[in-house]
Image (cartoon, rainbow, N blue to C red; front, side, top):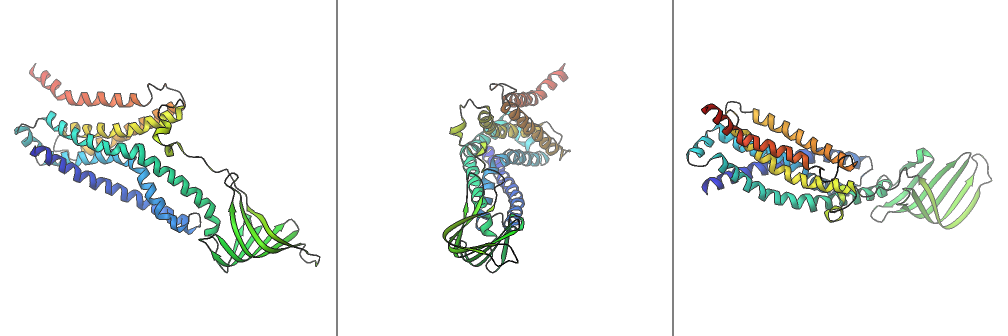
Length: 358
């Protein structure tokens, strides 16, 4: 029981440290990108930290496998270098017993991974989608500055606003110049607001209670029209609003679906849980079969195996999505191969021992 608590405590500390470090690296990289988007007016400033939080949550299922791999390697490599594994075996804690302790810890961790992967991460992805759509709607608004000219449609539309209330998307004392071939149009109004068409992606400014002047520059025959409401297109939508990504769909929506794209996503989510257990056990077997003098060898091999494992899963997911392989094969063949590798590593010392006896 003391040995079990000792190893569990060591693994928990290393796991928390590794996850925290990877989140910090990921968040720092994303934060710089979001700040750049905010500075360019593509992302409202009040969305930066919300977007960052959702991105971190959505990325956790991909962070967990490498985290449990590194945590297990750190614990057992240190114990091997300090001769603790030899002492444990001498005290009756066999390699099989060590594997059992690690399995117990990893299974509990995998329950947490399941909650994040099947429920929290898709929820975060959905909120990221919602924020992106809001950012598209407000991208023009965030670029408006009182007392400054703002160009749209490559300079064919020029807006000047005396006062701007971004929380209400309301502009006061608005001036808009529109250039169409040889004619020049001017709209002036006390009030105006932005309007975004979700279907087409088009952006409009809707003027209220103002005047419209249309004519050819240099001539005095301007046409003057008064209006109560007047909407003018300031920017064409280059594409329609995107639907939800598969990663943003709830697990309940994709489980048992005949759609291979959904089935591939479901098997991918389950695989992110399985890989945590497999990599953890692999780490223990790797250290147990390695020489204590080669301190960094397990880490090099471990990271290499992780890259191969995760890339094979990605390839299998693509093959399943394109219906090149059947559903019952799916991503499972990758796990079967890796489990066979685990059995080989576990029984290899015994096989070698039997050969030496002969």
